[in-house]
Every structure is written in structure tokens, then in C-alpha cells.
Image 1 (tube, each protein chain N blue to C red):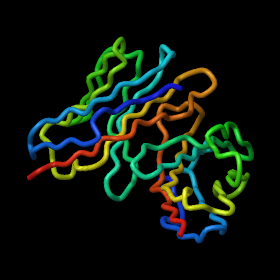
Image 2 (image 1 turned 90 degrees about the horizontal axis):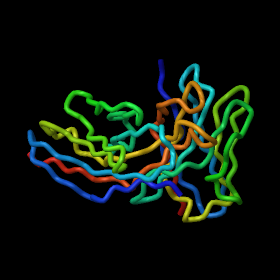
Image 3 (image 1 turned 30 degrees about the horizontal axis):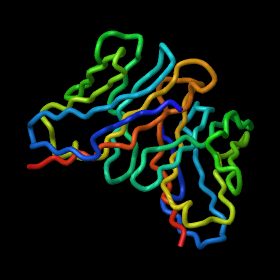
Length: 114
Length: 117
């Protein structure tokens, strides 16, 4: 059973460009969570999605950030008009049900904004 | 805000010795889960150990064990017989078990563990 997959692993964008981060949850998991890790910090919750639904986006910045988890295909975290402060590691996790006592993490995508 | 605090930014231990990493947390819930995650230089988040708050018995996984003090809201990780491969950043995290946000993991800032040969 493949684990949570994220791609790309590394992404470099110039200021003002768009970044698209992809996450494929574990097989059988329909709950996806995105976390952001700024340098020297722990992970912080951004958004929780189920298939075709955003359940909680309270951790997402109000502008430029959006997330989706379509019926088919991976979950996408999209950052428009990136700025240097968006440079971070973005982790996706999945679980088989909400409130499961374990979330399985992907390897993360490191975004660098130049 | 419900927080998780790791008061030791860095720790070091000699190979084969024992080290304890500290974690305290804040919560208004009576039931919840606590975790220790390991993050090596590869940045992959690896679950080390999990504790359910309603269980009195401290969790143990091979060389890793916890000291869970519910009343004090303390959750420390003990690594016995430390190995070079244990060197990593360790994060303490809490997950609520009920209410409206029982899916949000709240992480501490981490403790960087160095293992000296």
C-alpha cells in the first residue's frame, strides 16, 4: 500500500508566479489535511478537505491560497502570486475517517520563492 | 488558542545513553490524543509513539516510551539506548478527539536531538 505521495518534492518559483502542490492520499483515505512548516517552526494546520468538499480552511491565509480535492485525482494546494514569505515546506496528510487517531504524512514539498 | 510547548530547542545525548524530551500542552478537552513525531533531515514526518489521554498506562514502542501526566498536561518522550539514527527533530503534537476540530494536529516547535558517537 503506497503511502501519501506529494509532488513535486522541490519547487522554485519567482515572486508573482503561481505554485501548485499535489497530494495523493493513501489508498482508501478520503480525508486530506494540509500543513505548512515555516523555517524553525513546527507544522501548522492550513486546511481539511474531503472529496469535493472543503471542511475547514481556518488556517489558510485569506488571499492567494486555495485548496481542492476533486472527485478524481489528487488534492491541490494552489498559491497565486507567491511572495518570499510563502517559502516553506508544505505537508499533506491523509486519514481513513475524520478524527482518526493518526494522520499519515507525505514527504512534503519544499517551496522556495526567489 | 490551545498550544503545545517544547521548552528544549536542542538536546544532545551520547550513543547508548538515555535522553528525555519535554512537552507540555494546553487543552480544555478531557479526551484527546498525543503524539511524538520524528523529522530527520529528509523532512519526512515519522510517527514515533501515540498516547490516548483516557488510557492511564504510558505508551511504549521498543526503545521509545512516554511519561504522560494528564493532570499536569505533560507528555515527555524517553529514548533509551540512543542510536545515531535517532538524531532528528522531534515534534510533540496533540489531536482533539471531539468537538469541531478533532482533526487538527497542533504541533510544538520541536526539539533538535543530536546523538554523539
